[in-house]
Image (cartoon, rainbow, N blue to C red):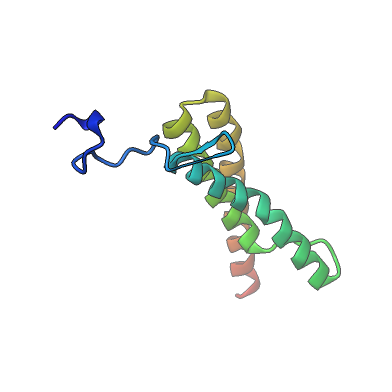
Length: 114
């Protein structure tokens, strides 16, 4: 059967709309992008909550995990979902810096535990 006829033999397509509402078309790739944005933006909520708890500015380790996960999801979206070089470049930098900061955090905690 031809893949364009909508039969059950049609492979799953990441760019195929799964929801349309009020002119907004949602595809699996967009869900990947939305999750990336949610993680990347949500890290600031986590940081503010940690700072309030500590009573001083602080960056918890989960901040870096959320930064990396959000950036990787956005990279996947911009590479495979949109093929957008601006989005790719704008997310390469945060993922590399967040990874380095996570490395520094692990190293600093290891030295304190010696």
